[in-house]
Image (cartoon, rainbow, N blue to C red; front, side, top):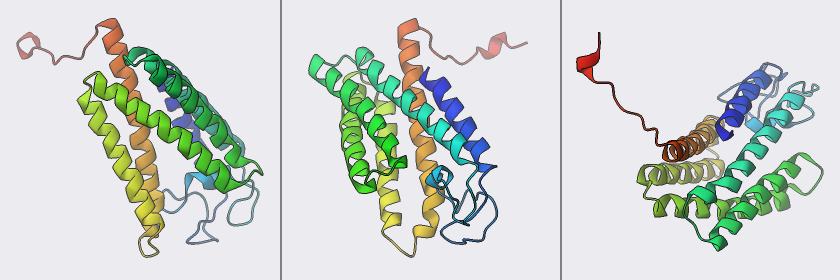
Length: 209
Protein backbone atom coordinates (compact mmCIF):
# COMPACT_ATOMS: atom_id res chain seq x y z
CA UNK A 1 0.00 0.00 0.00
CA UNK A 2 2.73 2.59 0.76
CA UNK A 3 4.37 1.89 -2.60
CA UNK A 4 1.04 2.38 -4.39
CA UNK A 5 0.47 5.61 -2.45
CA UNK A 6 3.92 6.91 -3.39
CA UNK A 7 3.38 6.08 -7.06
CA UNK A 8 0.06 7.96 -6.99
CA UNK A 9 1.73 10.92 -5.27
CA UNK A 10 4.55 11.13 -7.83
CA UNK A 11 2.04 10.85 -10.69
CA UNK A 12 -0.12 13.67 -9.31
CA UNK A 13 3.01 15.74 -8.61
CA UNK A 14 4.01 15.51 -12.27
CA UNK A 15 0.47 16.28 -13.44
CA UNK A 16 0.31 19.34 -11.15
CA UNK A 17 3.44 20.82 -12.73
CA UNK A 18 1.60 21.13 -16.06
CA UNK A 19 -1.04 23.36 -14.44
CA UNK A 20 1.31 25.74 -12.63
CA UNK A 21 0.98 29.21 -14.29
CA UNK A 22 4.54 30.30 -13.69
CA UNK A 23 6.99 32.32 -11.65
CA UNK A 24 9.86 31.35 -9.36
CA UNK A 25 12.08 33.01 -6.80
CA UNK A 26 14.62 33.62 -9.59
CA UNK A 27 12.21 34.88 -12.26
CA UNK A 28 8.74 36.08 -11.30
CA UNK A 29 7.71 36.32 -14.94
CA UNK A 30 8.75 32.80 -15.93
CA UNK A 31 6.10 30.68 -17.65
CA UNK A 32 5.16 27.28 -16.26
CA UNK A 33 6.88 25.08 -13.70
CA UNK A 34 10.66 24.72 -13.77
CA UNK A 35 12.16 21.55 -12.27
CA UNK A 36 15.39 23.40 -11.52
CA UNK A 37 13.97 26.69 -10.23
CA UNK A 38 10.59 25.97 -8.60
CA UNK A 39 9.97 24.29 -5.26
CA UNK A 40 7.32 21.68 -4.52
CA UNK A 41 5.58 24.13 -2.21
CA UNK A 42 5.08 26.54 -5.14
CA UNK A 43 2.46 24.11 -6.46
CA UNK A 44 0.58 24.27 -3.16
CA UNK A 45 0.09 28.03 -3.03
CA UNK A 46 -3.27 29.55 -3.88
CA UNK A 47 -1.60 32.21 -6.04
CA UNK A 48 1.40 31.46 -8.25
CA UNK A 49 4.53 33.61 -7.95
CA UNK A 50 3.63 35.40 -11.19
CA UNK A 51 0.41 36.59 -9.54
CA UNK A 52 -2.00 34.32 -11.38
CA UNK A 53 -4.49 31.88 -9.86
CA UNK A 54 -2.67 28.61 -9.25
CA UNK A 55 -4.64 25.87 -11.02
CA UNK A 56 -2.12 23.27 -9.82
CA UNK A 57 -3.09 23.71 -6.15
CA UNK A 58 -6.04 21.25 -5.97
CA UNK A 59 -3.97 18.51 -7.61
CA UNK A 60 -0.93 19.24 -5.45
CA UNK A 61 -3.01 19.28 -2.25
CA UNK A 62 -4.56 15.94 -3.19
CA UNK A 63 -1.09 14.53 -3.82
CA UNK A 64 0.13 15.83 -0.46
CA UNK A 65 -2.88 14.39 1.36
CA UNK A 66 -2.26 10.97 -0.20
CA UNK A 67 1.44 11.14 0.74
CA UNK A 68 0.60 12.03 4.35
CA UNK A 69 -1.79 9.08 4.58
CA UNK A 70 0.79 6.82 2.94
CA UNK A 71 3.60 7.71 5.34
CA UNK A 72 1.25 7.54 8.33
CA UNK A 73 0.27 4.03 7.31
CA UNK A 74 3.94 3.09 6.84
CA UNK A 75 4.91 4.25 10.32
CA UNK A 76 1.89 2.51 11.78
CA UNK A 77 2.79 -0.97 10.52
CA UNK A 78 6.61 -0.77 10.23
CA UNK A 79 7.29 -1.34 13.97
CA UNK A 80 5.28 -4.57 13.84
CA UNK A 81 7.88 -6.12 11.53
CA UNK A 82 10.97 -4.44 12.99
CA UNK A 83 11.33 -6.51 16.19
CA UNK A 84 10.93 -3.43 18.38
CA UNK A 85 9.63 -3.40 21.94
CA UNK A 86 6.30 -1.82 22.87
CA UNK A 87 7.79 1.55 23.81
CA UNK A 88 9.57 1.98 20.46
CA UNK A 89 6.55 0.64 18.61
CA UNK A 90 4.10 3.05 20.23
CA UNK A 91 6.52 5.95 19.86
CA UNK A 92 6.84 5.42 16.09
CA UNK A 93 3.12 4.70 15.65
CA UNK A 94 2.23 7.93 17.42
CA UNK A 95 4.97 10.31 16.25
CA UNK A 96 4.97 9.27 12.59
CA UNK A 97 1.27 9.89 11.88
CA UNK A 98 1.33 12.92 14.21
CA UNK A 99 4.10 14.48 12.13
CA UNK A 100 2.07 13.97 8.94
CA UNK A 101 -1.12 15.34 10.51
CA UNK A 102 0.63 18.46 11.82
CA UNK A 103 2.52 18.93 8.55
CA UNK A 104 -0.69 19.21 6.60
CA UNK A 105 -1.51 22.38 8.57
CA UNK A 106 1.35 24.09 6.71
CA UNK A 107 -1.21 24.88 4.04
CA UNK A 108 -3.55 26.70 6.43
CA UNK A 109 -3.35 30.06 8.20
CA UNK A 110 -1.59 28.62 11.26
CA UNK A 111 1.88 29.94 12.10
CA UNK A 112 4.26 28.39 9.53
CA UNK A 113 7.32 28.22 11.83
CA UNK A 114 5.46 26.58 14.71
CA UNK A 115 3.89 23.97 12.43
CA UNK A 116 7.23 23.26 10.74
CA UNK A 117 9.06 22.83 14.05
CA UNK A 118 6.39 20.55 15.53
CA UNK A 119 6.14 18.39 12.40
CA UNK A 120 9.94 18.15 12.20
CA UNK A 121 10.21 17.16 15.86
CA UNK A 122 7.70 14.31 15.61
CA UNK A 123 9.13 13.29 12.24
CA UNK A 124 12.65 13.15 13.68
CA UNK A 125 11.47 10.87 16.49
CA UNK A 126 9.73 8.55 13.99
CA UNK A 127 12.82 8.51 11.75
CA UNK A 128 15.06 7.68 14.72
CA UNK A 129 12.81 4.74 15.58
CA UNK A 130 12.94 3.61 11.95
CA UNK A 131 16.74 3.61 11.99
CA UNK A 132 16.73 1.60 15.22
CA UNK A 133 14.39 -0.95 13.64
CA UNK A 134 16.55 -1.28 10.52
CA UNK A 135 19.71 -1.67 12.60
CA UNK A 136 18.23 -4.26 14.96
CA UNK A 137 17.04 -6.36 12.01
CA UNK A 138 20.45 -6.26 10.39
CA UNK A 139 19.14 -4.47 7.30
CA UNK A 140 22.40 -2.58 6.92
CA UNK A 141 21.95 -1.55 3.30
CA UNK A 142 18.65 0.14 4.13
CA UNK A 143 20.20 1.63 7.26
CA UNK A 144 23.03 3.25 5.28
CA UNK A 145 20.61 4.29 2.54
CA UNK A 146 18.67 6.12 5.26
CA UNK A 147 21.86 7.86 6.37
CA UNK A 148 22.25 9.10 2.79
CA UNK A 149 18.87 10.79 3.20
CA UNK A 150 20.09 12.52 6.35
CA UNK A 151 23.18 13.75 4.50
CA UNK A 152 21.01 15.12 1.69
CA UNK A 153 18.84 16.95 4.24
CA UNK A 154 21.99 18.56 5.66
CA UNK A 155 23.03 19.56 2.13
CA UNK A 156 19.60 21.16 1.65
CA UNK A 157 20.08 23.21 4.80
CA UNK A 158 23.58 24.23 3.74
CA UNK A 159 22.30 25.46 0.38
CA UNK A 160 19.35 27.24 2.00
CA UNK A 161 21.59 29.37 4.21
CA UNK A 162 24.16 30.06 1.47
CA UNK A 163 23.00 32.88 -0.79
CA UNK A 164 25.50 32.00 -3.51
CA UNK A 165 24.43 28.34 -3.70
CA UNK A 166 20.69 28.61 -3.03
CA UNK A 167 20.00 28.56 -6.76
CA UNK A 168 20.78 24.81 -6.65
CA UNK A 169 18.34 24.16 -3.81
CA UNK A 170 15.15 23.50 -5.87
CA UNK A 171 16.83 20.66 -7.79
CA UNK A 172 18.60 19.21 -4.75
CA UNK A 173 15.31 19.38 -2.82
CA UNK A 174 13.62 17.19 -5.45
CA UNK A 175 16.53 14.72 -5.47
CA UNK A 176 16.33 14.50 -1.68
CA UNK A 177 12.56 13.99 -1.74
CA UNK A 178 12.81 11.30 -4.43
CA UNK A 179 15.62 9.53 -2.56
CA UNK A 180 13.53 9.48 0.62
CA UNK A 181 10.51 8.03 -1.21
CA UNK A 182 12.68 5.36 -2.85
CA UNK A 183 14.04 4.49 0.60
CA UNK A 184 10.52 4.02 1.96
CA UNK A 185 9.64 1.83 -1.04
CA UNK A 186 12.76 -0.30 -0.50
CA UNK A 187 11.86 -0.85 3.16
CA UNK A 188 8.38 -1.96 2.12
CA UNK A 189 9.79 -4.37 -0.47
CA UNK A 190 12.16 -5.79 2.15
CA UNK A 191 9.30 -6.39 4.58
CA UNK A 192 7.25 -8.01 1.81
CA UNK A 193 10.10 -10.36 0.91
CA UNK A 194 10.71 -11.30 4.54
CA UNK A 195 7.02 -11.99 5.14
CA UNK A 196 6.49 -14.03 1.98
CA UNK A 197 9.90 -15.63 1.72
CA UNK A 198 10.27 -14.28 -1.81
CA UNK A 199 13.72 -12.98 -2.65
CA UNK A 200 15.12 -11.63 -5.90
CA UNK A 201 17.61 -13.96 -7.57
CA UNK A 202 19.60 -13.61 -10.77
CA UNK A 203 18.52 -16.04 -13.53
CA UNK A 204 20.81 -18.98 -14.29
CA UNK A 205 22.65 -18.14 -17.56
CA UNK A 206 22.69 -21.82 -18.42
CA UNK A 207 18.88 -21.84 -18.56
CA UNK A 208 18.58 -18.88 -20.94
CA UNK A 209 17.24 -19.95 -24.32
